[in-house]
Figure 1 (cartoon, one colour):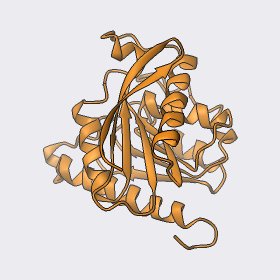
Figure 2 (cartoon, rainbow, N blue to C red):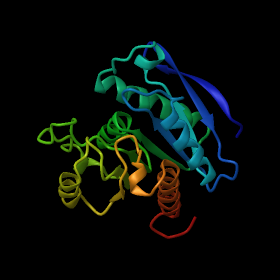
Figure 3 (cartoon, rainbow, N blue to C red):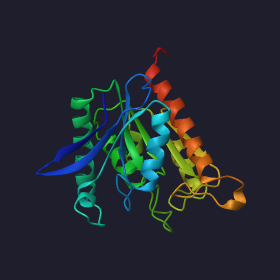
Figure 4 (tube, rainbow, N blue to C red):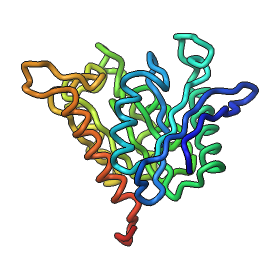
Length: 229
């Protein structure tokens, strides 16, 4: 498949999406990549992760939620966010026909994808980047009620300095989930996956770590229970 720009119907409206196939696709895995609340499909964070994942053999579809497509900074309601992800995923199945469909995204986008999967939407896995377990400064308001309903493998990557995901709280949540959930902590990274210079690491090194984890997890996902690609 060649790269292309798509117009995807979301209810009575349309939004933009971009399909980017990996240079050496490793078995038909496609990641439907939802952006965060303050982002868009072409922001620096989305593009950086997309480039890294393409190098690991994952095809990627990135897209705008309807509010961002209209130039607004006010996120759509959760039902609308889920409707958009479902529409993009369905469009991707028609256009690309991936053997392995992975939903997910950054922060709010990942949360919406996780709620869609918890509703039973068909996919083979979830990739959550900087999952927002709670609002900043409000660790008592956990966004975990739906997570136990997810029945597909999950890879979740959060930074140890993430103000929206206190590590002890997330580990408590993960401890109550099934073995389908894989949690990976990015040492010294914040919610945007940035690290301090004093950490001795660079943002590029964090991005490489993300890509390596995602690539290995996706390979295991494609192998399935039998262990074969």
